[in-house]
Length: 527
Image (cartoon, rainbow, N blue to C red; front, side, top):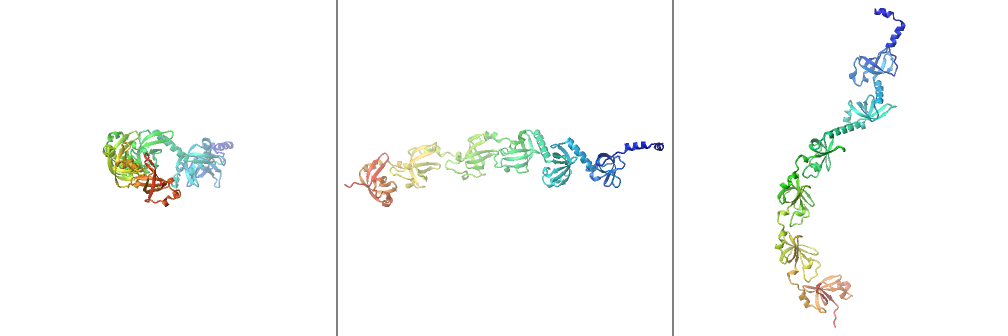
């Protein structure tokens, strides 16, 4: 029956059937086809044409889609080659369709998913529906090994530039990585709560603290929040790569900053300081730091006190705490004061012993005769040690009733023992004034009776100055021969004419009882 029907078809009917079943194709067009056969290197595709088309297997990025019966888009390269077959290209079809899709759905700055196909000079080629170029500088990968791992990965990229005439696309992975990090950081910040414990890795150490990676977000562990005690540098407690558990102290979501604490994991030792170390208590501690103004002593972990340099000794003048203590020494101290708010404790070593000045008024009353060794001499006086920690001063004016001294060293020597009288006491300011001349009565009234104005006397030259010559009239009394009372012919060459120890006849021309001064002259009237 079928054969009979076929024989009765007219030429017009046959032409119509042909027209409806055989497509009219053009080279350069894109059509749909169905895979009908798979050979060694080629894929045979039925495109509804008088001849089947073929294309290389290599044009399939994903070989798993090569299946008989699968529909694919193909580009017609050649309608008839030498073997009478249609030459097709899946790659060209994908590129053309991909570019149209890109233009319709994306613009510069948009995110798009793609697969890193291969590595090329200066970067990578990425399949995003069309081949896009990923510069190495925008790959977000550091080092050759990391870059090599990108090939074959399907990732998100940001479209950096689209050149429509040339159909070129440049993408960036670096921008997406930064965005992903920010999003992850934001999510983590949202999930965190102040006061909770988190584990992190020490990422960086600075002079003021350490940055801790909490798993995508960094927090700062400040040096003051590492320990209740004292450290000079964070490296004393932490090292890069250390895994530590910290407390979240504060979260600044607006600025993406997190403050962390380590010492807050333990109770603040200062809460019990007043109970453990009451005022006046004698306690022991370890010297942990020495500074020019004192030494810090650790009383217990996290609690330190300061021995000020003035609190080391009643009797010694300490210029440097190293003179008495060294780091690591165990010392006994007295608690002087506590400032909980500012975490300060004042300590003392000298308070362990009685202040030698506390009994100064009973041991050295005014008017008492005392003995001591001269410790040192200055231009204005001599300092005498009365007992350990107690010194008195003999002012230059209290050494002699009659002699005019330029320096106490003229009559006193360091290390010699002297006797003196206590003239005054100032217990609060720790001062004792002593006098040597007060051991004997003032000889001035008796001496004056022996010498009268206009009398002539022979004396001995004791000092020569630029304004005159001092003449010793008695062992306790000097007079001044002023330059104006010397013959003008020798006035400018005193040291040439006069020698210390020479005897000289002089006339007394003035006696000033208030100032205790005697004026002399060589201008003697021989009438």
